[in-house]
Length: 74
Image 1 (cartoon, one colour):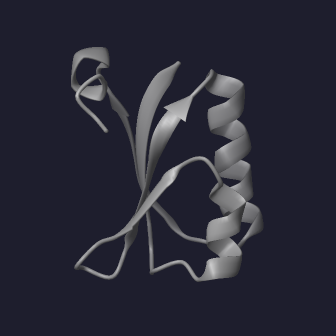
Image 2 (tube, rainbow, N blue to C red; image 1 turned 90 degrees about the horizontal axis):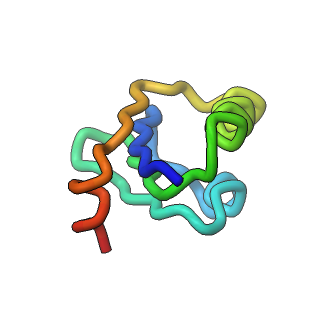
Image 3 (cartoon, rainbow, N blue to C red; image 1 turned 135 degrees about the horizontal axis):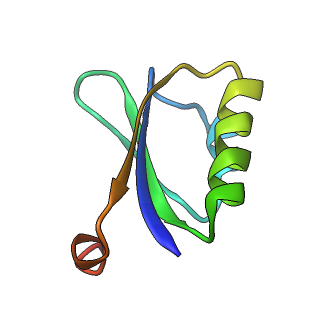
């Protein structure tokens, strides 16, 4: 498993947030949303990217967090 932090444009409403169950969603002060959590493999990452696209959400960034830093995440 690898820990990813994705940033998307805008704050997500409850309906869109349901699509990311099991992941941490955090609204950011600049109006974007951070979606973070552990993903099993590249296939799961690509599935999430497809979900973001299908929901019409603009992807701003994808960041893989190193294992040692991810271990410190709650």
